[in-house]
Length: 247
Image (cartoon, rainbow, N blue to C red; front, side, top):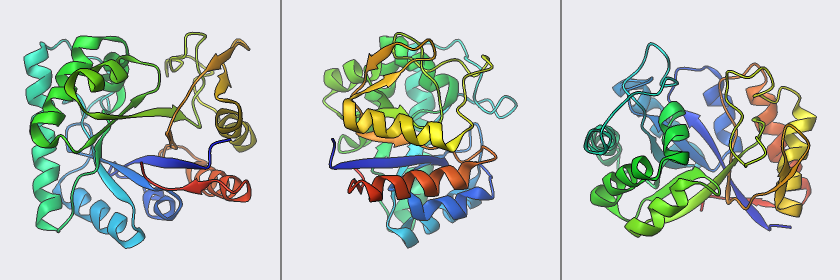
């Protein structure tokens, strides 16, 4: 049984639930304007995170507001590097003006999924982070190309698992296009989180036990049950004596 875990949530994306979720998490991934958000939402989200003592990180994506960053785009490694660098600069300048430092970077949507399997994309992202501030932590899917990229660039890696997503037999997230990709019952989400922390594995959609070691768990803020999920997962962890803190 792990004694602690980081709970992260994607923020600054325009959902009313964000204000209610913030007290239950330890890390916030803030949209940088490419898939959602703008300067005012970044300022609001950073202020809210500061109020609750939540670590802030960048949530860069493909420049694709039309599809909420969930459509993969063909880019060279150099283009990925520049795209991520530009977004880190945007959020970092706002955070610095508010006396805050970026703690981590977690790519969003399709960029996250591509980088989880394509090492060159993950390395391009990691280089952008390291060149901006090598103290920042790379958040990415546990047991994926993100871990390789972090090792090659000297970044600290924080392997991520998901409370409200199902998994394939190879430990990847079930694509959102599949009807069973999202977990919509809070008791199932809680059971998945506790299984991960107690046994170091999750059960794939087909029923296979998949070994998974993670130090952060993502709870999404955009679902109809987002606030209930956040509060009940938070409370379930506390009831088990598991501390919730950033990495």
